[in-house]
Image (cartoon, rainbow, N blue to C red; front, side, top):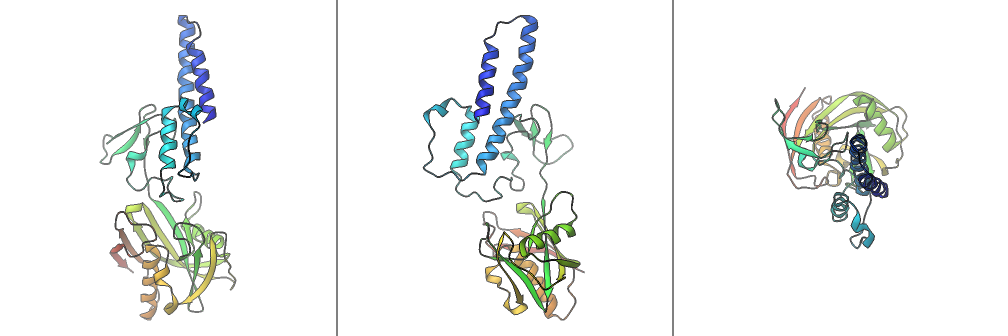
Length: 295
């Protein structure tokens, strides 16, 4: 933020310099470049402030009244958001109206339907680039060992203190299977061998797709990672369904228990989880499973 103000002072200094036709063209060029830098610095500052927890009693020093209004508005909206979660810096599915600035040049966006498309998009008014929103992929492992499954108790929000399969967001540059193995190692300090894909679950409301693999321990060793407070093996009848972290975990484990109790090898399942709008991530009962297929 301070850097943005310094740049604004530089811009003001340019405006009061004497002008000639050649000099004016030069100053216009630099003023345009500085304005772009200001927008980018402000967007960076917004990202930094969005990661901070600002108490409700927070007040600004009087000298801050000269800051750019867009930056002040950003700070004000951040400090009043009491429902923020670790993923709140990401736009929810289809929430294109919240994209106010271009991620490439910092320019302001307009919201329109581009030619040949059907969805509302955020289009930069400066460089013309379109911001496309795409679902995120979550990958993980359902680990079988001695007729039990391995669960981790979450040590982070959302769903702090609830049980989950080791799973997390897929990273750029890795396959779904590689990501699932990595997440298992990070959350349960367990090395696993993937057996087969078990389930794919799409959750359109929050823009996520889950892919969970069946896996087995290479060695019977596991322990809580940085994001887990406990790791434990559960028999089918011991699985704590009332204390699971997410609806995706409820569906995955229910499908697994049904397959196992039917005395058959686990099948591959696909389904769509339709969550009730406005519910929290840890509200595991507010959903319906549709389009269920198995093979």
